[in-house]
Length: 94
View 1 (cartoon, rainbow, N blue to C red):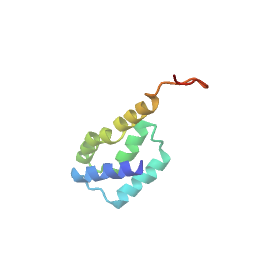
View 2 (view 1 turned 45 degrees about the vertical axis):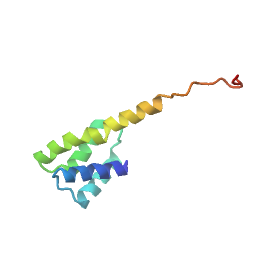
View 3 (view 1 turned 180 degrees about the vertical axis):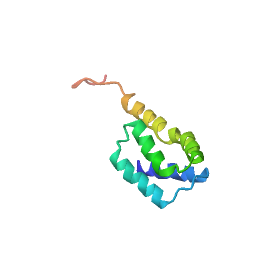
View 4 (view 1 turned 60 degrees about the vertical axis):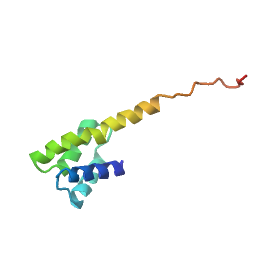
């Protein structure tokens, strides 16, 4: 998740949001307290540490889902979906 947060911050920087090392450190500290599974709390903790103006928040909103919950949902679906058929114990292929 750390790499994803750093990549997200880089994307925000590239879109004009002024994020320095201190904001990134604040974000990591906030996210130590908030579980990533609580999407609203996670998003607000991250936004409160990196989006310092209404314009920054607009950019944050546009980029956030692409980096976190859409990707997390896709990963969870891959975990839940097992393309291999189950085999009974002791069975042999013929």
